[in-house]
Every structure is written in C-alpha cells, then in structure tokens.
Length: 420
Image (tube, helix red, strand yellow):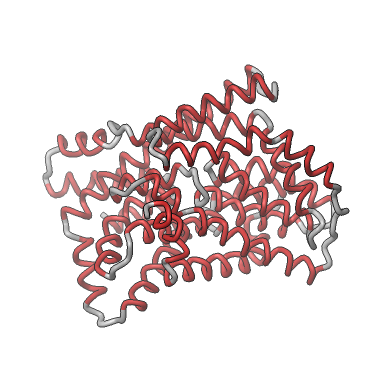
C-alpha cells in the first residue's frame, strides 16, 4: 500500500486520491468488506468540531476579499519600516498579524505577497529574496492562533483546542521574531534600503483604521479559552463578525467579493475534507496492521537516549513536510508518533505544537511547498530560483523547532499559567 501510494505521488496524482486509491487496493487484496471503507470514509465528516474549519476559512476569505490585509500592512508599515530591509521586515511582521486574522498560511502568502512582493521588487529587492520572505514568514499563519490546522490536530489526538491555541502563541511569535532577525541581518549584508521613520500620528491613524480587524483574534481566543463558546461556535460568530465589519464599518466588501469568499470557503473545505476522508482509510489500515506499534518498538529498541529519539522524530517530520502536504502528514504520523512521544514523557499538547511547526516548514520547501508556489508566482520566477534564499529561513526555522522540542516551557508556559 505504501509503495503504491509513493508511486502515485511520483506520477503526480493528488494526495487525497493517492491515499484513497492505495488504501482501497489494500482493502480489495485483503478481502475486507467495502462496508468498512464507506463507514470509515464518512464517519469523520459527522464531527461538530470539524464545522469550525469551513467557518475559519470563510472568515479568512472575507477578510482578504474586503481588503483588511491592506489595513494590517499599513499598521505594520508604519511601525517597522525604519528597520534595515524595511519592506522585508514589514512582510514578516504582517504575516504574524495576519495569522490571527486568516488562520491560513496560503491566505497570508497570497494576500500579503500580492501587495508587498511587487513593491519590494520596485524598491530594489531581488525577486527571489522577496518570494523567500513571503513564503517562509507566512507559515506562522497556522502556528499563531486561531488556526484550523490546530483544530484538526486536537481532534485527531483528542486534545483541547483551547489549550492548543494557547500553546501556539509563543512558538509562533518565536519563529516570527527569528525570521525578522534573519531578514534584518541579510538586509544589512546586502544593503537593502530602509524606509523613512514614521510619525506617531501616522502610526496611530493606521492603527485606528485597522482597530476592528486587530480586535478579532483577541476576542476569538478569549472567548474560546474562557469557555464562553466552543471553537465551532466561536468560528461561526467570527465569520459573521468579519462580514459585518467588512460591509457596515469598512464598507469594502461588495456582492462579488462575498461570492468569491463563499466559493473559496467551499473549495477550501472540500479539499480539506476529501483529504480527511481518504486519510482516515489510510490510517485505519496502518493501525489495523499495527504499524504505529511496530515503529515505536523499533525506535525504542535502538537503545537511543530520549533526546536522540526526539531528534529522530523531528528530522522525520521535517523531511515528511518536504514531500507531502500538511494534513495528510498529520493523519499518518499522529497515530505513529504520539504514542512514542507520550512514552518519552512529552506533554501531548507540546508535541502537537512541535509536530505542527516541523511540518509547517514544508509549506515553503520544494517540490510541493504551497506558499512557495504562490510566492514565486507573484514574484514571476521559477521555484528553483528562490531555493538559495530559502535555505537560511529553513535552517533558522528548523533550529526553532529543535528549541521548542527540547525546551517545553516555551510551549507550555501560557497553558500552564492559564490552567493554574
């Protein structure tokens, strides 16, 4: 099954269909009744928790279509443009801010990149560097809460969504700050331009104009963490909130934009749920064949110290993120790696965040990096042209993942503080 799956990926078949076809082949060869396939395929769609995914996607699409990304860019531009490589710094910090609004790395790469990449090229930044910054910094969109990917991890691993949201705050900010420092260092070395220092009035004006957008992620997280609403209920309210401020306060969302937002949400939800459905069959086969237990026994039997096994898990996740999309990786590796992590004494929420951060780096690495593809398209260059500028960002990101792995307090400090 695994060999067929890999071959289908090499032949260019979409991941969802490759997982489903290879799992179905196993079922047919083993003579398992197809009733189990149908039941497994549909069972995970009957989940109240998963209703949060389309609402979060819709909220992000409304924000993008209404031009709220531009308001956030204006705030950040007025705050950090005076740093070395000012527009590069604006790209990184805007992605951190957009994370709390869209919850999607793809949406961040598209909305922020479409504004900043042409401007960076015009100001003298190379196209490859502009694409590399946009592609790499946008991954914080699924690490800083709210994040639809965190909801999937929490559901698969039977964790608290609220605790996952809290645990993702420091790691997301840490990775974003690391990328900001790297951007400044590269900009100084290459002599990229600084922008003029903004006035206090300019910054205040930009912040006031973006106030309602900046308020959304704060309210959303507080409502979920305080137990006022479930993540699904909060996501639905957030989508309505995004619609109301876009139509009645900013007056920047027209009928065509709303139609595009709904279509985008429908398409995005379909893609995610199709992968979820086929991945469930694939995971069922792995679990029924005791693959997680076999791999766990093999790793534990190597006689490696705990830190060595943790390092091996992270390296495997980093490599897996390069060759396959994030959601299928979650369905494959959560059943396999979570029992190992628990046996090593790692907190499940901590390991969930480590897994998310490690796999997120694959979003900007070739050959299938989604944010890399979008950024290169916006910069009008080939993916291979951006690889040289991407390497430092990948290495820094990998270093941050290792830091989060071996210093659990960075991840668990806020959840532990809130939970007493």
